[in-house]
Image (cartoon, rainbow, N blue to C red; front, top):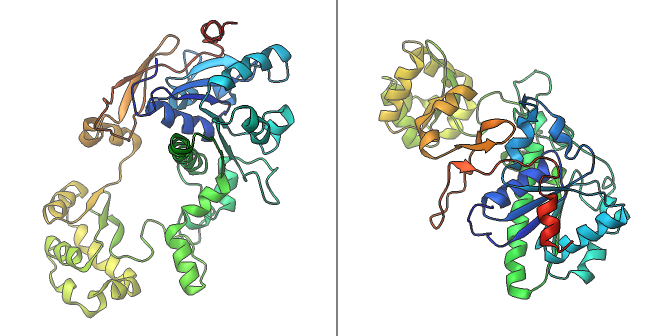
Length: 383
């Protein structure tokens, strides 16, 4: 059963696979929607084969498909098309992340479906969208990270191209698609009519370039990687201490004054090189040297305590194990578990959207086996 949420009563048919689409529908499921995952017959979602595996079941697949139902259909077979069309008649939303034109060739593109199912919301999440010269090209996360400029901003100056450490190409596209679905549901509540949502992974990478685009439009200069510092605010970066790294983010002159006090170096605040953010950016190398000369006298933990006490945002550089041990992460229920009949108890990231009207359970329904819910779904459809 879906968990209760603001989308309770909404039925989503999820034809997507791997990450962008499944991430979108996981968000919708976490908000209460019932999600039926329509998988290809045979192997199902490609990510079922991706490691690591727990008792033979993909941890990758489970991490983005919890709480969904599964039915395997061959959309070229007449009997399975009948089942799918019965589901379409009941569905509120269809989500797919095929290459543009795939659903049209099957006879299930938006233009074909909308006259038959006018309330149906059709969400397409693809590499390049359904228009433009590249619309028929396939894409994976790294392709759009590279094409969309994100990799050109990641890493250290002079270093090789560096992928962002998580699949932001897929995940951001999934999030934008979920936002589009919720907007379309609101519009349908007002007008009674469904619509098409066309989200391109490449578009989403352009949309999150934020400061880099602003700098390019303002100066005409092409931004590049800066390592672990902010391009237009200082001090706002990773610094070295006696035994490791910390982040200090002094986002204005008042915070810089407080930081100088915490460092035991109040004179830095009145140094002409550092008296304004613009001056600090122009002299960022000298500023880094001045700050790190003081930070080398104590440990990362000691400095975080001092700087926090002064009211300046700061923090450690956590690895994944340390993130999961953070009391704040635990308190926010950001690690949940499922009791999977194959893999046993499996832990995964929780839902970051906390809603005052609904519980945020720490136990979630398991990710389905391929075709696990076929019999129940057919009974529901009277087949």
